[in-house]
Image 1 (cartoon, helix red, strand yellow):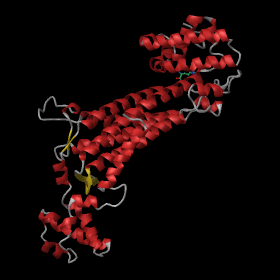
Image 2 (image 1 turned 30 degrees about the vertical axis):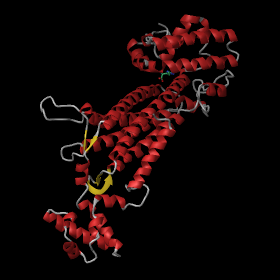
Image 3 (image 1 turned 135 degrees about the horizontal axis):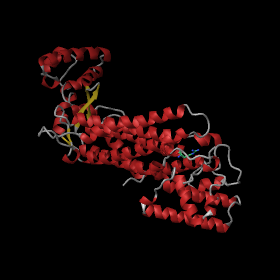
Image 4 (image 1 turned 90 degrees about the horizontal axis):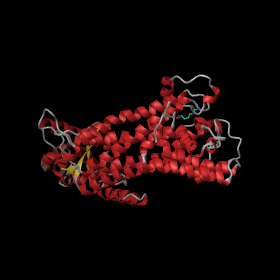
Length: 461
Ligand code: ARG
C-alpha cells in the first residue's frame, strides 16, 4: 500500500520499521478529533480559494459520513494505515477520489497531530473534572456525616492534636480542588489552534486562522509555527495534573489504609471495596487503595518520561513526539479508573466515632494544657517545659491528664486550678481554635459550606 509520503522513495519501507513507527493502534483514539479538524480545514481551504463551494460540500459530506460510521462502528477505525491521519485520508479518497487528495493542501501532519491531541484533551478534561468533583462530593458527604466526631491528627505519624473527623476529610478536599484547577490549566495550555503552521514554517494558502480557531473552540491561535510544530507543553501540563492528582489520591489511600487497620480501627472499608485472602480466612484487604497508591508511580513515570523525551529535541517536529499519546491515554485511563473507584470507597467508609475519640484523648492534649498556663500569664516556652515534664511522668505511670486529681494538677504547677479539667478534653481543644483554616467546629462548618457552594458553582450533581 502506498503511504502518505511514498513519492520520494524508490524502495519499499522495511515492514518491521514501518510497523515500529506506526501509531494507528493507539492514535485511532483521535479519530473523531482528526475528522473534526479536517472538517474545519475544508472551510479554511474554501476561504483560501482552494476548494469551490461544491468541492467543499462533497468533501465535508464524505468526512461526516466517515465520522458517523466510525462512531457507530468502532471496529471500522482500523486498517494497515500508518496513523489515524492516513486512515481518514484513505477513507476520504475512497469516497471522493481526487478531491480527497486535495484536502492535505497546505497542511502537515505535524500540525494535524498537535491539533487532534489538543482537541482531544479539551474534550476529555471536563469529564475528568466531573469525576473529580464526584470524589470531592463524596468526601464532603463523609465530612458532613462525621458531625462532631473527633480524632487525632498526626505529625511524623505520631499523635499531634485532636481534630474533627470532618476536618480530616476536608483536608483531602482542599488538595483535590487544586487538582481541579490544574486540570483546567492543562486545558488552557491546550487552548491554542495550530493549523496554518504547516510542517514548521507556515502555509502558502491564505487560510483564516482566527476563523478556524473559533470554529474549533479555541480562544487563540499559536504564536509561532516553529514552536507550534514541537510544542507539547500542554501534554506535560496534563501529565503533571494527572500525576499530582494521583499523588493526592495515593496519600488519601495511605491514610485510609492506616486508619482502617486493626491497630487504629478508626474507619472500616465496605466489603464492596475490599478483597479477601486466598489463604488467610480472616483477612479484609484494602486492595483498591493499594492499587491507587501503586499506580501513582506509573503516573509520575509518565510525567518524568515525557519531560525526558522533550528535553533533547531540536526545534520543529521530531518523531519522538509521537510518544506523547500513549502517555496521555494511559494517564487518562488510570486516573479515570482511580476516580471512579474512590467514590465507592469513600461512600462505603464507616466511621467509628468512639474509637476515634478514644485515640484523641490523653497526652495529645498537652499543647492545650500548656496554653492553659499561657492563659495564666506564663511564657509559652516555660509552659512547654512544665507540661513536657508532666508528660514524661504520666507516660512512666501509664496515665494521662484525665486521671489527675486537682491536688496532683497543683503539684505540677500552682497555676493549675479547677478549671483546667474543662480545658483538657478533645472537644474543648477543637473549640479553642480561633482561625478559619482550623478545626474549630464553626470554621469546619464554614469550610464544608464553601465546598458545597463550590460544587454547585461548577455544576456538580
Ligand atoms: N503519528 C505522528 C505523531 O504522532 C503524526 C505526525 C507525523 N509527522 C511526521 N512528520 N512523521 O506524531
